[in-house]
Length: 348
Image (cartoon, helix red, strand yellow):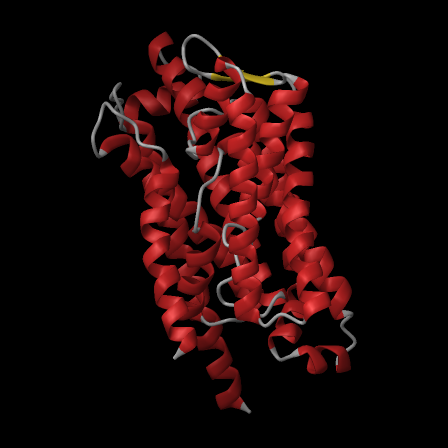
């Protein structure tokens, strides 16, 4: 009995240490991201600005440009990575993620529909994306993401698709939404087209504090819900019949998990554009590192996702400075090899 207790303590301690290391890494990268850019800042300047005693130029850069960008990266990483972990669980498919299942592209389609039909988005002369009504565009993006996830789930239900086929169906749905988005862009005017194309890059520089607040609310409410359902997800990992024998309503858990994951993804895409493969690679890296217990997987995955997106954005801002690359390019470079690796491993 004592040996079992000691083993469990070591099991828990390993995960706590890993989480602590991730938090320290997130803090260090955040500080570096605040300091680095076209306008270099020292630690003392950052501290003075955060305390309200900084000069006008430092305050402008920190509070209006870099802090919203850092928070957007953290919230995006939390939302996409945890959504991917939950989708892989409820669909029992290691290749499931908001990107591969068509949710991201569906949300992008909904956002483009909102821009061209409601006139709530456009591009200013400075190149900044203007969002007149972020609530409407988020709703449209959410409806677009629901179209993608419902199409995949209906096909799986009616045709009895295998896990591999469900991912292929998601890829097909993604292509369909991409074609529909391209069609909308073809009939858009110059200002609308500039907004839609710029969104599709997946850039963290466009959200301001109002958008960051919306993302924070949705991300943290969804994270709390997923953590609350952690035991149900652990039961699902043991198989459908085992979960039902433990009193888990598998259909309800699957549907609610997909809906909440769709909401988080749609909000991220509505404000940031498509940032691919974060929801695919983060859960697998955490599983390899600390195991698949969802009591620890969900919170650790959220922190690691925040670290990954913030690190990718910092590299994108500095690698060929003063040119800033869209962060979606870097995450796709990271995610595509991981996707191929998982695909070949699964078929083996």
